[in-house]
Image 1 (cartoon, rainbow, N blue to C red):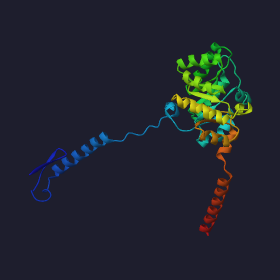
Image 2: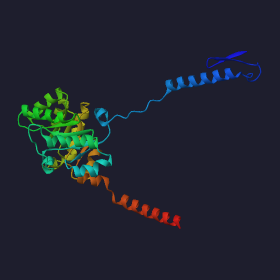
Image 3: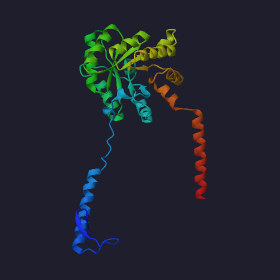
Image 4: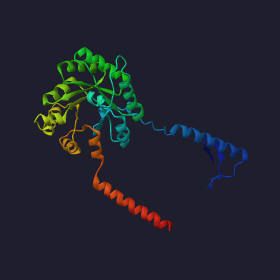
Length: 291
């Protein structure tokens, strides 16, 4: 009998196994085997997995929680962004003023440098920059300028008549938009009709007005769910970690938190106490093993 093995014929005795091969036949068989293995390897080789950079992710498809660090202070960025819990950074004119970032026309170098640092050094998915101006034309112009700093920029706009007009044009031009300074449930529906990406109620200001901010946000979320809207409510200007938890219970999934609230979220005294005790015991074991 003759069998074909990787393209080489070999004599078989008819009993178990095959008869002895010549040296040339063995060499040809080995060469054929190596060539075939190489071909099979190339056919089934697993390609090196390519992890998408934050810039390449379609952030609109994610349904989980998003936290944004509400700060323009790079020292706070350096402390908190390495926690790995933040989807991005949220800034506003007050935060920029506190950080000493000026709006120097026509190129706005300090603001541009801040955006580049967020994207290049910390690889944030998004950074919010508020457009400035009092007319639709001014808001569109400054919004486009902010967007030109980097495509990770989300343009925040005041929910005024002019701000809404500007948002419509910016969205038409492909910009990501957040309607800021929001207070009422009806504004949530308008933001959805506008097809904005985010709608941002100011929690502390709503509470200061005498309204229950958590209840208001719950009703906003219900209204948006009622029309199957995918816009995200981004709760901003939070005073405590407890407010984050209560808003999450109300169905809110996106939060802009100050460094103070971020530290409060990350710090739990009992956890720290137990971790310190475990470390103390571990250090004792290490000393005993040396003895």
